[in-house]
Image (cartoon, rainbow, N blue to C red):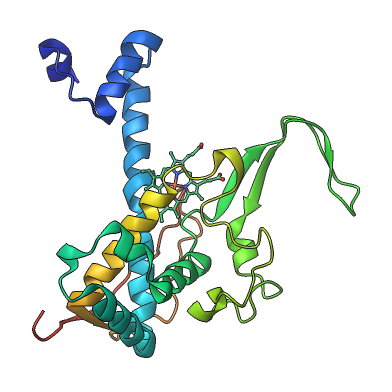
Length: 240
Ligand code: HEM
């Protein structure tokens, strides 16, 4: 910040916008640091976590992993450096695997809102006053057997076209005007990350790989945190 300030460097990037806001709107140093931190967390950690959960599930489900690899090789070839935006988004099985990963492990386990007018919850005597913070449990919805039978089973076929979802039961990117602004980019980088890994490596469970990743429920974190990390066996594919 000092370097850019002193040398009047404008690189037309995210950081330049923050420095402009500092000058024009009085953004403080801590606010700038906070924005940068959130940008890394929201922009990258969400996708890298989803990739990790996905690989963990594919290590346990070799048939699904083979099916996905076949779809990738048949449609995009074996060199992930050549995969394009359009290519990545048109793979139906990758789409199902991606969504099922986010259903089982939504990066953000809840959405938060503040009530802007008194609201009576239908069918109850509960009235939310204006100003009440409201937490909506995405994890709760997405693990509810009423909406997703056998909810802890990893089953990408839940997202088949002929099986419409119950409205609002699946919201890994949130809903409404404050939903995720990076959804398209997040989908792209996550799917590309999965495709790049699957095209080069085979993943298998190791003795240290639990069937379901244990989440640290007491972690004071906005995004979900694993208790013991994610461990899998990685084998380089022949010829890749
Ligand atoms: C797999 C990837 C991602 C997932 C699962 C995800 C999920 C979410 C969720 C659940 C929310 C809260 C939405 C709500 O309250 O309705 C959110 C908000 C947000 N996301 Fe993402 N996200 C992802 C990728 C990204 C990327 C790549 C960026 C930026 C480049 C990003 C930037 C943001 C921002 C800035 C917000 C706050 C929006 C606001 O408050 O108006 N996200 N994301």
